[in-house]
Image (cartoon, rainbow, N blue to C red; front, top):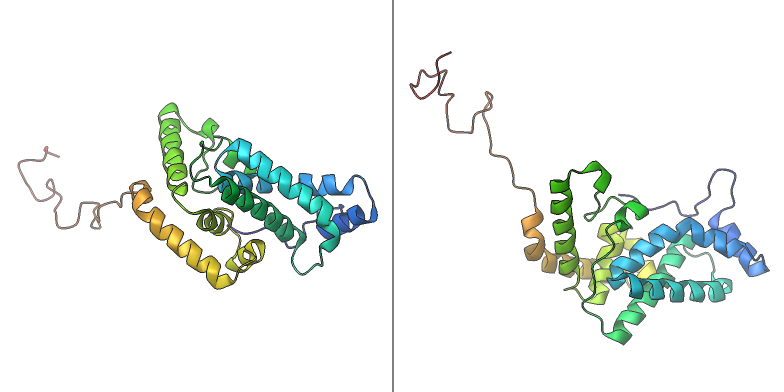
Length: 231
């Protein structure tokens, strides 16, 4: 999973930095275009960090209001998208700390498809049969329940690095902490999640020999065993 380009610019379009500069200069539409470009990913980060749609919407709104008002303070030391994520994540963490939220409702089922990030939680219902949908829903519920056990700081670090695919360096900029702090938070978060999510790990297939038999066994038919049907 890779992060987005440092200064997203669609073919024939204006770059993030250009849109932000136009907004600061007074263009009434530039910031809306910039937000629309990154809306899905910012929304996914807010949802995963907050844990429920209502609080995520408030966190995203507060973050974007802050970005709108403080755009003039952007110095270009990081990519615009990194700066936007930093503002939104910080707004969400501020809400979590103020509310002391540790448990919340499950994320919307279609979040991962809208964000198109292909993470642990993603599965397109249209591609699954009813039984698979049930299994996917249960896996999603278990992952969300596990995420709720993390501290807000650990959850934010894991969301950015493990689920959104940002590098440790990028996450450090967004969270305004040292890279070592991000690594530590991710490590502690993973250690906490491991026993909770171990059941989701795929069961390894048994080893087989060249004939496809389980290791240590023989093909009963080729060995002449009476247990096998005649060939």
